[in-house]
Image (tube, rainbow, N blue to C red; front, side):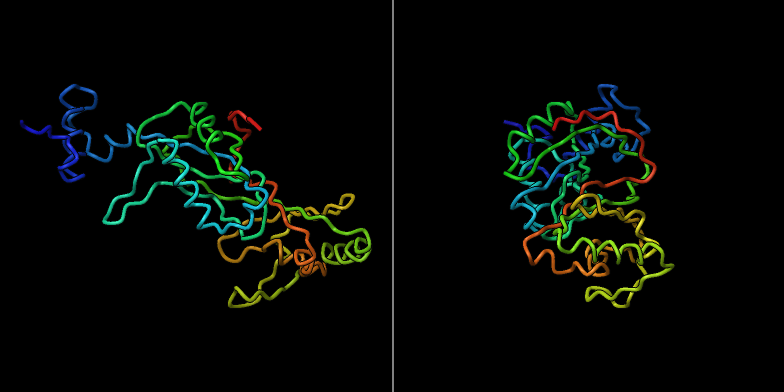
Length: 259
């Protein structure tokens, strides 16, 4: 029996070309469109807000990415793949979350090879997500829009009552300074973090900070804790939580917030 031209015994590139020819035969796309344009017409880009809580905060970013990929495969959602000899799923995180930090409103973007209903994607992912991974919203965005850029991130951590007076004094000194240079073992040279700290407050027992993102050397939440004399808090059983990831040029989203 003759084999269909789209069977999996044929090289993947040939399958794609044959599928394109078939689409043109049935007049789905114009004959002058190239292969990548045809495939882009079939794909769908989704922006997903999620939380990484509980023991999952102790999972590295790389392991989280693997877990998300497995989640999509279990849910049988058709992830689009990159080209080349070692294709991988088109999943991207706007900002990697450092080990040990809880994420309450994180952002990832995925590209599906075939369109799906966003509501259905949400419910499918939420039902199958591992403990600690909470899907908050799913929305469709244009695949050809400019690359998503990060504007700022917000963090918070609990400060014990006996240390709050000292922290307030150090906060006041920091906020009234023009610069604050810190050293970090992960960086080649010291950086001035003062400009990156957009907001810094102590409300009740919660220290809250918003940090501006920079492509050069952005301040990290642990840099701020070090300046305030709180770099031992995490060893004492407290932990940082990233409460918000703000995208550049973002407006109020129409995505449903399920949680």
